[in-house]
Length: 156
Image 1 (cartoon, rainbow, N blue to C red):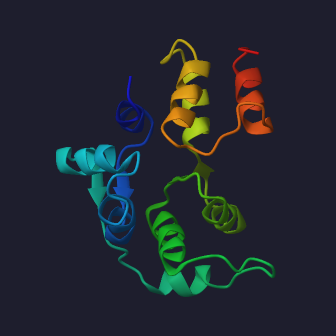
Image 2: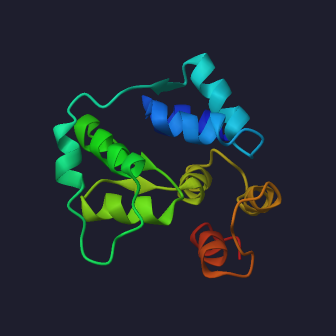
């Protein structure tokens, strides 16, 4: 099962801003995940949409103290999630913190895989985590996130 199938299963519709598509697919050409995202957009699994109410960006731009590494695109992502009442799918730490700050639900790749494993959609988690690492995903197999994921699905 590929991750696109999991997006279809758990997140419909799956939306992406044109700016995020550009960052991942155009500027990120050759990186892991870029071809899969391009294919998902081409097939309609992921739809490119623009933020309709740009005033939401003003609301999101009010950052708590200490939160300085947030890009304009990150602000737009959270504004779109608020507008669409959607869950943010991201592994980026600053974007995740911004989502939490604005009470926007957020889940990352590992969270989606955990959910799929607990639902019986995938038979085992560990090989998929190892595939993520092999493809360049920043995850330490001896670290807390990796080990906690295995514990959550009783694969430790």
